[in-house]
Image 1: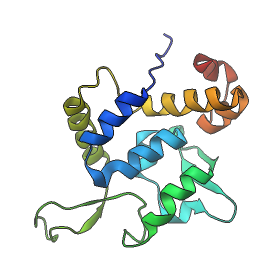
Image 2 (image 1 turned 120 degrees about the vertical axis):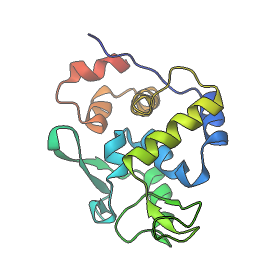
Image 3 (image 1 turned 180 degrees about the horizontal axis):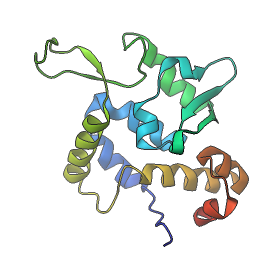
Image 4 (image 1 turned 120 degrees about the horizontal axis):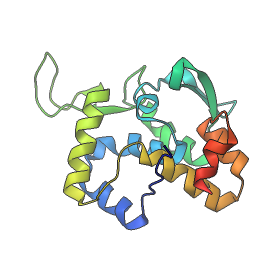
Length: 170
């Protein structure tokens, strides 16, 4: 069956970020800019970012290791996260309470389940209908295609083996 393509509108994006916890903004913004899958976002570590080579190493679907370009927008998003964050994990959240041996306000790595829960809550509060985290990938692809008109570039960003898979965005 053909996969649906759902793009986040500008108004929906504003609603989403107005209801999303601020400490989760960076990871969602990263998904919207990079087209990375949920697991790829959560597992991103600092050693996988090649600042000089302007690329990011991504451990993707099927245990494949690929690279995506470190665009100016991604660099602008990621660079400030180095200060005061986790020494290994790129995306962190602030603990709300002192539990599990952690202090309130401590930075901890965002987990897969934590992101799923925070995402569901923000989508519900925002009133956005029928939008999954994976749809951020579709949004990134559609926006890039609209901006460049280059389907091959979108294929490389999404790391599709077959251009026919990418054609759904055209």
